[in-house]
Length: 461
Image (cartoon, rainbow, N blue to C red; front, side, top):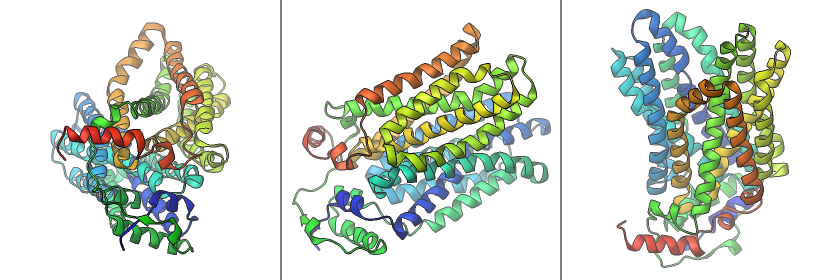
C-alpha cells in the first residue's frame, strides 16, 4: 500500500475510542510508577540514617545524583524517541528504571545504591518526556487537555501513594520494600504496554508509510470509523532524513524553543519551591507543627485535584488560556500563603495553591511537545525538560540565598514573579496548541524543513 497516510489530520479527526482509553491507561501506569519511584526518596533516606546504612552527606549525594539522572534522561529520551521511535523509547525507559529499582532493593551499600539510582533516574527522566509526548501524538487535539489532566492525576496518585506506602511498608520491610514495589509495578506496566503500536506521525515522518497506514487503520477501526481514502495522497519519493538537534536553534524554530524553555523552567521551579520549601518556611518562622501537617494534606490532595480540574475545563477554554489562568492563580496564592495564620486558612489556601501549581505543571510539561514538528518533537520537549531539571540542581542554592538575604518574602516574590512573567508571555506571544493541528502549529514544511535540510547538509545522518 504505497500511500502517504496524512497521519496528523486523521488522528485528530478520529473519535475517542477503545484505543485511546487503553493508551491513556497504559501511559498513565508508566507515569504513576515514574512518580512513585521519583518521590520515594524522602521516606527511604530518612529510614536509613538510624540504621547507619547512610549518612547526611551520602543522602545529599543520592539526591544530587537523582537530579542529574533526571536531566540526562530527559535529553536521552528526546534523542532516542526521534531516532528509534516512540514505542521503543517508551518501553526502554520503563524497563530501565524497573529493573534497576529491583537491583536497588538488593544494594549492599549506600555507594552502590547511589550508582544504581543515578542510572535508574535516567529512565525516570526519560519517561516524563515520553509520556507527555505520547499524549500529544495520539490523542485528538480537541480532547488532549482532558487526557493531559488524566496523566497528571496518575502522577499525583503516584506521589501520594509513595508517601502513604512509605509510612506502612518501611517499618515492616525496611526501605528495600519500596524499591521492590516500584520495580515490580514498573515491569508489570512494561509487560502490559508491549503491544502498544508505534506513533503513525513518527512512522510517516521517517518514510515508513505502509506501517503508518496500518496503525492508523487499526485505530480507526477500534474507534468505529472506516478509513477515508480521500484523506490519502501519493507517497513522495523523498527519503525521510535525520534532523540534527541544531534545528532547535534555527531562525524558524528558536522562538518555540525559548517559549518551551521558559514554560518548563517555570513549572518545574515553581512546583519544587512550593512543595519542597514552604513547610521549611513555616518551621523557620516558628509556626506550629499542625500547619506543617495541614500543608502536607494540601499537597496530597491538591496534586490530584489540580489535574482533575484540568480534565474538566482545559478543552473548553483552550490550553493557552488555561496556562494563563493557572499561572495567575499560582502567583496570587503563592504570594499570600506564607502569611496565613489560622489552621483552616493554612489548609484551604494551601490546597488551592498546590492545585493551581499542579495544574500549571501538567499543562506546562504537556503542551511543550506540541511546539515542535514530528521530526524533532521529542528532542524539543526533552531539551526543555533537561534545562529545567538542570535548573533544579542549582535551585536550592538560589532559594537559600534569597531566604537568607530577605526572608520568605524574597522567595515568594521570586516565585510569584516568574509565574507572572510566563503568564504575560503566554498571553501575548504564546501559541494556543488547542486551536490548531500540530502540523499547523509547528509545520514540518516551510521554514522548519528548509532549515533542517540546510543543517543536514553539514552533518552526517
